[in-house]
Image 1 (cartoon, rainbow, N blue to C red):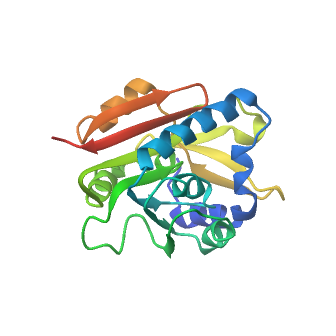
Image 2 (cartoon, helix red, strand yellow):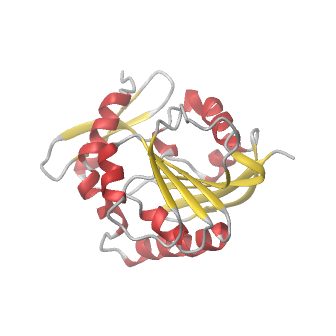
Length: 222
């Protein structure tokens, strides 16, 4: 039986910072097109808005929204990720901040649009309610939440599932370029399961479930 080791997961992503963006440029036109389509939808969604990005990683989505957003606060737990993100060029005022998304330093709602890219699959399912309360507490009245994440991939042996924990969370092997191995929590979702998870807490304004990725726009229950 597995248990979620958040320290090991954070270590994995910190060490992977310099190689992380390989995921966006895999040699697969269909996969790449799905990302580009989400980029265009996100730019429209972010136009003229104050944006808070949690788990910003290397700043891939930060650069995209900066083309249309009014301003962006981008946070990540990992200093190494933020170092990589700061190397990019941006088109609106950007503030980077090291912060745990479960313990944010904002006393009041801070944004019109909140981004959470490729994190939800790492969130333990038993903690969804706590996460959703955190996200809703950050958006202003009429604010929106945007998420994107992976669908189950057709990957090779290096990415085999290795087990589940007592809550039903899935664990998979992940390797750095130097072949250092980690086991991290990684859940996948059908469109129907995402609706079941989100509907008790949010208005689902859109939910796109493609071959490689899913994305959603959520708002507070009216």
